Image (cartoon, rainbow, N blue to C red):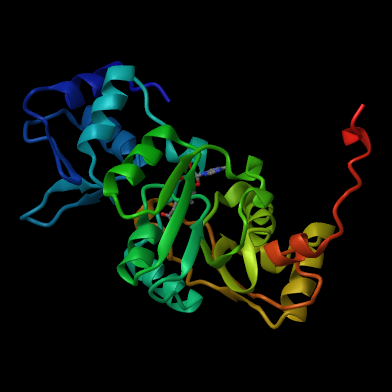
Length: 276
Ligand SMILES: C[S@@+](CC[C@H](N)C(=O)[O-])C[C@H]1O[C@@H](n2cnc3c(N)ncnc32)[C@H](O)[C@@H]1O
């Protein structure tokens, strides 16, 4: 998304304070321009904190380097374009509690954004491999220094068989637009003994297409749960979309397509590998 010229001028102004996780504009703007700056900063992932001591747009990550790159390019990756809605801290704690992450667990975060879930996981001693399609957010993840590995790229294009073994836990809040594709792909990275916990659009609870229906049946079959989250769960991140929490426990020997399930499948005959 291109910055409007007048917003770019305000953000690049020497007087604008861009520090740590905050952006503060300490000089007066006329109302229409103020509103444009506000909309842009919110679309970049910030939220307005009007408390006396703050009075700034606050981001769920350090904003300086990210903003420097965006201002240099004259554009930014908007949340609406990329489905980036950071998990609010209380919900991140609830999700990681539900996943039961303990020290030494290997954990996959396949759409890690700026690391809202990563921070909760690593604070409990989880060893995280994180994927993020947006290069700038991947840089933020690397800069945090708490992941075991960070991959900048499309998780849906990642082959689970490149891992010798599955993960103990999968914790995720994928883009709302194709969340179920992300969940089904992520299950292929999980051990049979693992757990997957994911935020999803609440529509998954009632959508009648075949993929959603079969997924609900599968969740029930393995003793999992799909629970509606409160209406305002993502309000601080700038969206009113209704969400649910999906919990899928591993189910040894069942038809859940986990990493172990894939490993149990007979190898394809290498018909074209025959030596000449
Ligand atoms: C709803 S946000 C959640 C971010 C983070 N998981 C959190 O909880 O704060 C979804 C993130 O997935 C990223 N994303 C979208 N498609 C992706 C893909 N195919 N592979 C990896 N990341 C992707 C977006 O850039 C965005 O940062």
